[in-house]
Each structure stands twice: as C-alpha cells, then as structure tokens.
Length: 161
Length: 192
Image (cartoon, rainbow over the protein chains, first blue to last red):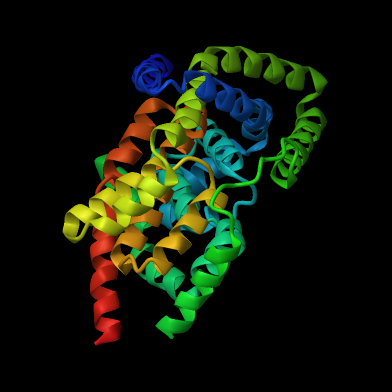
C-alpha cells in the first residue's frame, strides 16, 4: 500500500513534468538525461537493496532492539544522531542501513534522527565540498543553527509515537 | 575574517565548474557499497548458509521489481528538474528576495536542486560571492540537505516506507526557514 501511494505521488509529478517539457520541446532531452541517470542509479539501488537485506539478516535483533528500539528511549536518538554523520558512502548506504535497522527492530524515531543527521552533517560531504567551497566560517554558522535538528526531529517522532 | 572567507568562496567559485562532470558509473562510493554487500553476504553464508543468501537475493529481486515504477518515475523527475529550472535562474531568485519570503524561496530552491554536493556547493559558493545574506545561504544548504527532492524520490522512497518519508518531510519542512532566521540573527550579532 505504501509503495502504491509513493508510486502514485511520483507519477503525478512525472505527468506534470512531461506536460511542462512538452511546452518547451525538451522531452527528448529529458529522456536522454533520465537514461544517463538511470545507468548511474540502477546498479547502486540494486546492490544497496541486496546489501540492506543481507545487513538486516546479520544485525543481532535483540541488541538492535535494546540499543535502538522503543525501550531504548531518547538515548537511542542521541546515539543515532552521532552515527549518521560518520556513515561512509552516499545516500544508498545511509538508506540501506536505515532499512536494515528498521527490519531488525529499531524504532522509527532513532532511524529518523540517523537519516536526518546524515543528511545534514555527512562527514564526507563536509570535508570534500562544504569546507573547501564555503569556508570554515560559513560551515560553523550553519552548524551552530542546525546541530539540534536530528535530536529535534527524532524527539518529535518519539513523543508522537 | 569575513573578507578572507569571501575570498575562499570566490577563488573556489572561479575555479569550480558550475556543472558537474559526467559521473562515473563505477566510482569509489560504488566500490564501498559492493564491498559492504560482499562482506554482508559472506557473513550471512557463515552464519546461516548459502541458501539464505539465495533466498534474500530472490526477495530483493521481487522487491526491486515492485519498486521499479517508483524508481523510473523518480529518475525521470530528477532528470527533468534541471531542464525546467536552470542554475542561473536559481541564483537570481535566491539573491533577489529578502525577508522571510527570501528564506522560504532559498529553502524551496535548495530542495529542488538536482544532483549531489558536487552540484550544490559550487552554486552556494557563487551565492557567497554574489553577496547573498548568511540566512539565505543557510536556508538553501539546509533546504537541500533536509528536503532534497531528488534524493527523496530516488533513494529514500525506494528504501523506506512512504509514511516514514512523509512524516520526516512534514516535520522538517519549516526547519530551513527557522535556521535561516537564526543564522541571520547570529551573523548580525557577530558583526555588531
């Protein structure tokens, strides 16, 4: 059901983009770009989905539940917020780990804190792009105002649940 | 201090191409992923035998086929966005608005940005050179980090349930604007 809803939402977007591209005569260009992107994306999604399934099988469910499960409380959100930024690799690694952890019994709140912390503070992104391109001061300013976000997002989900 | 940092961004913006190089299909990130998956496969074979790996492989194929319409649609939208909204247009819009509306627009355009950090940070460095205020810069980068449409459609929606993704997005949607306001205040205090 969830997959169906997501698919419908995405295809409404595709239909809208297709209409707009038709007006500018860019449909062919968009399809070529989509094929290029697909060549990059498909191998990653395929391997990452397989990795997520294998990873979930290896995670010790009892330990995942006690460290990241519902009973672990707010501490799990703090732990997950630290784990996010040190995750190596791109989005596929982060989301594969998230899916694996949920399968193995992690609660939603820490997993959401984890993905949010990774999205904001992925160490590889900061070291390779943000510090060299924007400079230390701009990074520190962004960090100063955004560091509580993973805890906040995880906390809201924790209290909603 | 501000001057030297502006120079950092200026130098980088001058040397950094606004458009990313064509991405290699097999890069370092992909090799990390393959290595992690192989190690996981070896672990599962050691713990539960080869047959369990074959079963998981079969389950993954069924899941991937179920996901494929979503993945194809997501990839098409991600490829179409740069054609519908150009980088120049984004830069002009982010620099052209003030107030909370400016922050909201910066966050929204950040969310629309296609591609990864190799695409976004050179553009953001260009904003610094163009004198875009600190709040809009923070709102743009935070909007891209938290609400990135491209990543959400292709990756997040593939691995996580739609209700997880929608909950995360609805909690996060206002945060880039709040962070932009906080950054403006902090920047103004630091200069005072």
